[in-house]
Length: 276
Image: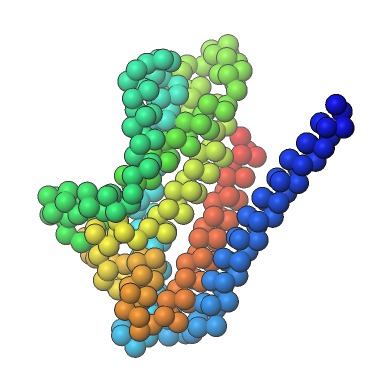
């Protein structure tokens, strides 16, 4: 009996290691393929401040990507975190309305991005009259990432031990002070982890932005101007079929940008977690 148990454990361990190895090899292959295809085609003209049909510069798209990411996070992160705080700390447990909100949040997470793009086109671009603009794209992206931020922040708040809350109440702290001075700092690494995932979705989004932010290759000076992000820029180059090498170079820059953003965010989360 003991021999069968050990054999089954070794077999499961072998399957686990094999699955992990396949996943790691696939990831390394994808990253290596993108870098090998893209890095040789990087050249100074791709980083010109102005775009034209000859240099097909990615710099305006890179600047627009950073601006779009910041705008979407500024719009979505505070409501998402405060909604999670309400659902976790203030709402009654077993409340049907809370269950409905959570079910709706999970449902919104599975909606295809093109549906969000069509909604943004009909509402922000047409109904509100914003036109193809950074603002319309940012609000559309904020709706897309809001469920992700709410769920990740909610799980992070739940992970904070109840002993922290009970200790704060025992020392005479009120509900609001306990939440913002004790619970929220303890949950901050998990909340930032959800925001990092949201950043990845923003940077890699294409369909929703084509319908809302447009595809104009310029550095925006106003939120009401149209612009394209790196993912939209890469899609435009590959669709034309005339600048495939530059499209591969853009993919490499996009990959490096995502890695840098995630690394900086993870470092910030680690520092905040250490202070908490």
